Amino acid sequence: MTPLILALFAGAVAGVSLGALGAGGSILTVPALVYLLGFTPAAATTASLAVVIVTSVTALVAHARAGAVRWRAGLLFAAAGVLPAAGAGALSARIPGAVLTLLFAALAALAGLHMLGRRTSPAMGTVSGARAAGAGAGLGAVTGFLGVGGGFLAVPALVTVLAVPMSAAVGTSLLVVAANALVALAGRAYTAVHLDLALLLPFLAAAVLGAWDGRRLAARVSPETLRRVFGAVLLGVALAMGAASVL
Image 1 (cartoon, helix red, strand yellow):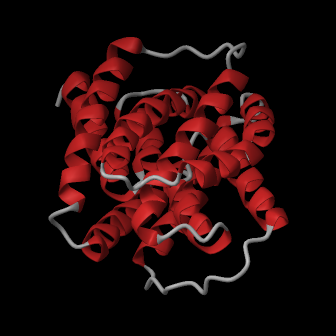
Image 2: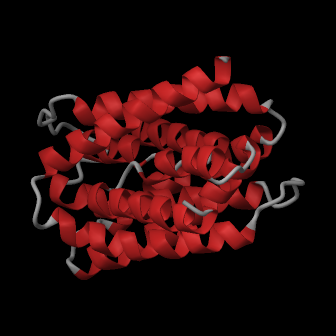
């Protein structure tokens, strides 16, 4: 395949994942940019933030139209991650590429195991402000450092920490993801990273269209089936990235 076709295909897959699950899109974006399109790890994590912002907002609009977004809870959660996302985004540019790759592989493995694991219904107790702030800050730091949206972390955190109903957790996570990614990208504004726009823009366009298709797919296919398919893909990505970084 030509680089352009690869960019369109990979972007579509990442967008479908994000639109259907509110997660997984950025974890597929970074390895696709590195191994399929030749981006450096630093450039890939920066480009991933741009992809996350646009695709998250696109999918968020669809969820908002369906009334599946809890705006106040999402904004409060995102606010706690603003400073960590900005600081981690600036720090990431100074980390060696091999280290970023290994850390990203570990995160992809964690995401894959989470998606493959059996989901249980969390107990809804009293929402703790400290817990909410801690969870939001942690998610912001992960977003800024590794260039991922962190939807696979945001969804369960919103359900367990802020008592957001599962029916609205995916849509609300997209709001959190978009806000954190925007701040993280701003934190990298002055880093000297070259982005190949000739490949990034087609990737982004395909991801946007994929996000809309993912939203429709989520209404037709069992969420359990979607999670398991993407979980298996993420585990494969993690193994491949880990092996490539040590060889």
